[in-house]
Image (cartoon, rainbow, N blue to C red):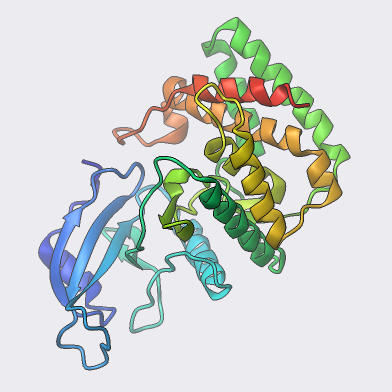
Length: 325
């Protein structure tokens, strides 16, 4: 179970007491976390005079950030609030009676979030793909209006450093493919003028909740940072519109791009650079999965529960995307 910071009932009751959200009715540690400690928390709101809902309870997620620096958590919470204020479906952290969204639990940063509605997708329909593209475009429109600066922990500098560490540890053919692909991509990228801002960088299907065909919540902004909007879109497409062999599903691919362009039309350079951006996104996640296997200390603290995902999937995606160039 991925609960690294064990909280007793009295600890959680004291924590939520700062928010005026009712008395503690129940809690449960969430066992599928990777880097943070999370608890589902329910509160009894029947005695709150201001409560207008007919429900007797409200649901929240209490998160203790195990690895992130306090300054990084402050950025993420502030950015979630910016996106929330812009109308994006995100779960912004609650503010306590002193006007703060960031707390401390056992010396670690912590926050309380509303529990988002909706469910994860096993299979993506064309309608849902369109919705995902449109929501990402709205997120990028909001980002384009702000001058926020923050380095993503998995930015291109991290990829390059990780590749150098991986080369002695992987087979020669993979090392050659990885080196050649990365060098060629980085040499080609500067010829395009690509709009940028704060991007999600990790909007896989498991980081979105759906209610029918519509995105109900975007989750996990803890890799967010400055980057190119087209690259962010390519990360989404590579996960949401890839078949098992890495081939693009044309219908889902077109739907995502149509959804995006319906909200924020891509520039001519973004369109021209599209195959390259998908290659870069594939390299980044191939590298990330290789580091989990060969260099786990780069991704996770000792003893953390990790989810090992097959790096061959993103190698296959890279090879398929290179055929589009």
